[in-house]
Image 1 (cartoon, rainbow, N blue to C red):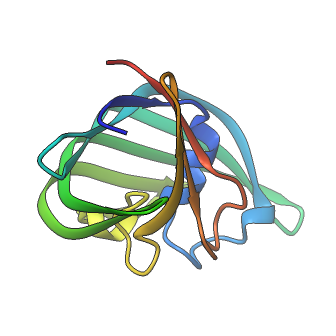
Image 2: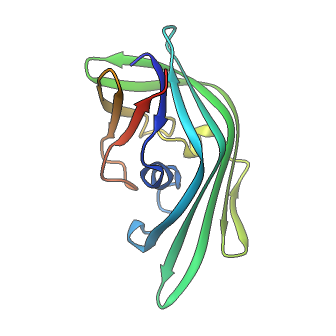
Length: 158
């Protein structure tokens, strides 16, 4: 698990970053994303997440209307983590220097949020995941996470 991992499926990651209860997941249609997200697990038990101009877009269907939802992330966040058997858990937020915003239609919905409010594996009570790791891939499966029903998948960068 030690290494730097890049997210494989931006849609799943973006869905996981939308605060629970903000939108009915069935009303969201993924359009596209640019930029990237990487998770770095180090030997000292620190997880650092870097978002590089990461922007994702969805259409949100409300009745017969469609509204645009744009999520932006940029910067770093870190937390201590612990491994117990096949599970990883974040236990203490160390830094949250990541900008996050969500623009819904013309309105800014969420801004100036801390990593513990939106970042997958940082949000309590969803800060525990089963993990599967090989030389080139990492999968985090969250238990009872309301926004996603499949694991976050990563490929090894280093």
